[in-house]
Image 1 (cartoon, rainbow, N blue to C red):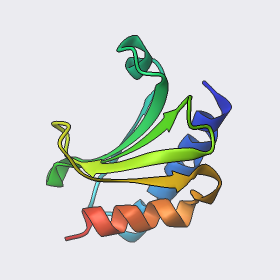
Image 2: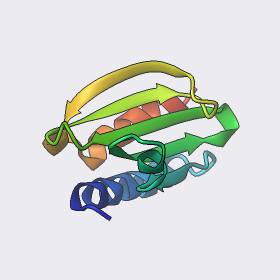
Image 3: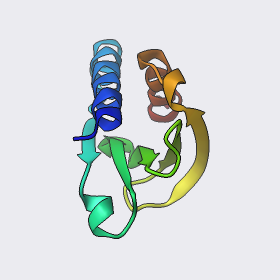
Length: 107
């Protein structure tokens, strides 16, 4: 696993733990795609955060050609994207991820 993916996955994992401690009635599923996208010809890795009960997903894309930024897309499990934003990779923190989870998974 590449170091950027490993570092971001650790941030997302700790954010998931914090989110669950605040909202233990909402279960999230975290996934790491370190080969799937590459096998499809995309030079990127991804981390997904799924809220299955609400059919919502956050996708964090780490493109090889954009080493200092990540794309974060909000959508659903089927792959529909509702919004996407670019973030500087060094500004992604546990608090940023928890904020996104709360904004998207708390109704």
